[in-house]
Amino acid sequence: MGRGALERISGSRLGQLSRQLAKRGTIAVAVLRLVPIAPFATFNLVAGASHLKFWQFMVGSLLGLAPGLGAITFLSGTLRAAISEPSWENVAIAAAAGLGLTGLAHFAKRWLRSG
Image (cartoon, rainbow, N blue to C red):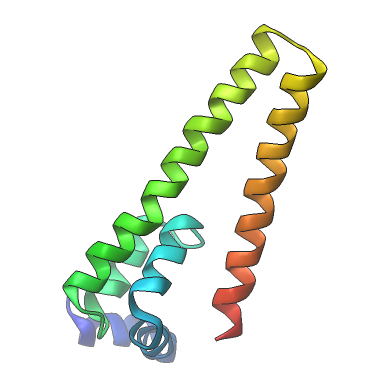
């Protein structure tokens, strides 16, 4: 699609997001992958049209997706244990995992908006 076409569609927002991505690079990609604020397809379009380097996008995606997949696997395992064998311990672990993920998402969202 190209940067020019995206700039015409999105206006100044793409330029602002492109500068923030370039400024924070790999870490910004990792956080945006960890906490999917925008749909993946939209983020991929913006990242492709930004000043972000390919290696920053790939490393950031790897760093951002791996913990989320691990956390989802852990959370689903704890939820399954809490449902199949409901004990205070299993329910507490599942609740703590859910609250921890929610807190991490909130922190990451605030960090991205602070820049």
